Length: 304
Image (cartoon, rainbow, N blue to C red; front, side, top):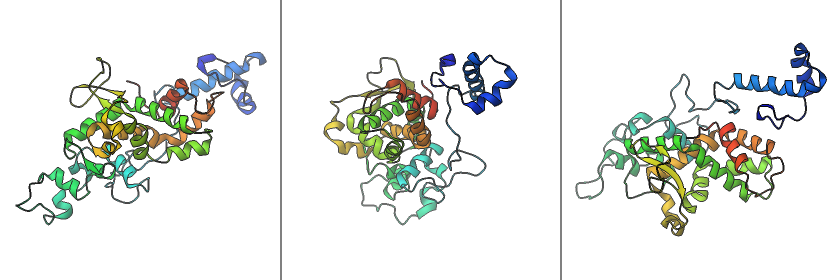
């Protein structure tokens, strides 16, 4: 029953045993082991080299395909929440010009700052002021680094890819610890709250951040060439001043994009795996192996 690590296959499905194992002519006492081996081979063959990743492929508006993705403010998107739609758009596009419309094409010059204004006149700042920048839907205000730029967006995307597993792991553990009883309905309801509020509340406001400090040489290489890691600092300013979680910077945006890559796209599969492999894990108890399996097997993130 532990062959290939498939410990949860302790019994044989009668139909599968009858249809798959008859040609093998296995003795009855070995049928469960043979069935596990056949199932493992089939799952590996259909996983496109992803190993244990068993997530179901579902059609998603921003998953690629023949037609280009619409602008994040357009129609036919997979979530009624503008912030969640903007996350999907940011994963698909890197710069404002790639989203489909630049500032002047969209609103002309009527909203440009007047000659007496001391405000930022850059196209990035104009896109932010009128709400065209996708990041504006998830961050109401700007941080010290200013409005989103092409390098900042590329940095956020690179960190989201490299830190996806870690972000997913922390989020799943935090959500699990808050549920009185982790049922299918309770898990899906918690996941469906969306990446923006979940990341803001469970990561940013609790001192989690993507940072280049304290990594001790271990982490992921960002677009800027530095080594980044996910760390928690419970003494950080943002813990005492949660309003800072509303200010945009690429490192904070990276956590939201990492959530979108995992919980945002695979929440149904993750909830199913958590319940399937929960075994005797009590509610609100830590089970790091279970949380890691939900992210690597159901959300298909790659540990780096």
